[in-house]
Length: 203
Ligand code: GDP
Ligand code: FE
Ligand code: FE
Image (cartoon, rainbow, N blue to C red; front, top):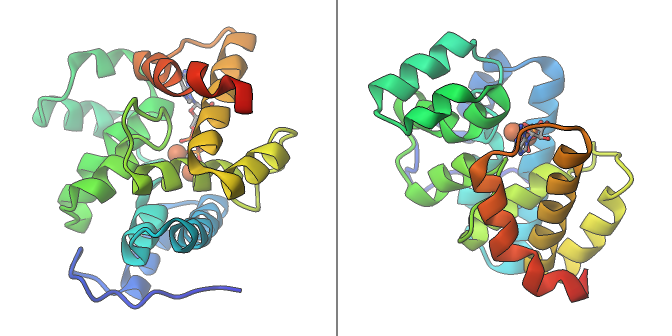
């Protein structure tokens, strides 16, 4: 069942429908539908884990807002905002969350730091994540459109414990990157160290 949240907290100057219309414009059709599924998954997890539903909806909808932007937009944003210069060595996979959050702030007028951190950390995770950040990190990974082999276990663990879901995704993502000889963003390693070793026995 699809849940539509009525925005009442003025976390941005748009209704949900106006936000959805902007996202439909900013994203490819596939990416737009992914974002709607992440929103619904995030709302479900927010109900289960006692997190603000309006924040879950906004963060779920906005998490990939910048995904389709050209590299030059990210490079400009990194310089103008004085973000970590090491970001210049990375690519869209890393930028669309960390740098994309600044675009959400400036272009969609979202200033809530919990929502912005959920967007910033949705790809790499972080050593410390709020319940909302954990929910967006997991919702992106387990939304119903995902079909990789590990998603079944990821869904089971997340239904049982948000912490175990985060630990499992973090373990799988690092293994995936190493397996494919892809460079590992430093934050991804910090996330691994903070979440995986102490939960390994329960995964
Ligand atoms: P999506 O935006 O919904 O497709 O999902 P994500 O934002 O979670 O991931 C975007 C891409 O970043 C995926 O292909 C991940 O495998 C990749 N990714 C995640 N962490 C890292 C990392 O540390 N290094 C690199 N190179 N890629 C990563
Ligand atoms: Fe993403
Ligand atoms: Fe996503």
